[in-house]
Length: 328
Image (cartoon, rainbow, N blue to C red; front, side, top):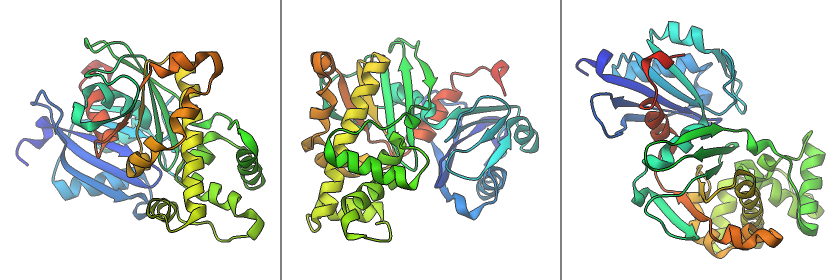
């Protein structure tokens, strides 16, 4: 690439499974992802190796970067929650010869993407259908983990993102089946968080709890559970996905109340695979099942992000908000 050092910036979305990278042209006003790559995290010992591999592949030498990572981002040392990678941002910036390095929580990045997405990249699920989402906007994303973010402000250019670790709140089961799921998770992990139920492995955990009486081992593959539920070939898989959608509705409703949300956006790699199923499930019924606050929640717009790379897109959108003086 010509003039890559001054013209292009690096953006990344570092999850528990994959490390995704792209470049953006700093001379362009619109956010366009260039040279997008997804690299398996297992192929690299650390984040620096993955970044250097990507830069070698693309021939780019950026001086600015924004990294979205699946972990808290306070302080200089960053430790990923669902991958055994850690780094010091100051050292990584020096080793990559960057003038600016911004590190964001991954769902902080997804939240930054929301106001920049085109309407065709948002799939309407429930509530008022709007050209521009109203804030505050809760963002929840089941994937390798469970991301939660909050967007406050307006579409007049004054949006601000609050990065949270809401995915690690405690699971509040409703009914006998969810109590059984909580008992199964509690027997296998030190704590029953909503992430243990709603991340990708959560589908495996729910299925295992439903089949516990039969002693089914090993854990079922989440992708296979979704496929079997959608094609109707497996009754347990269908019950698993139905329960998953119901729990997601309860958690989404709780978040909307906690955030005072007027809109809620679902991101992550799981839900876009079964939006029609989600729409016809108990998701919205459970979202609204908050007693006297049901009418309030009925006015909340709920959408699913359809963009293939919301983390990268959001990191790019965030980078455009930062001034050079904000580096580090």
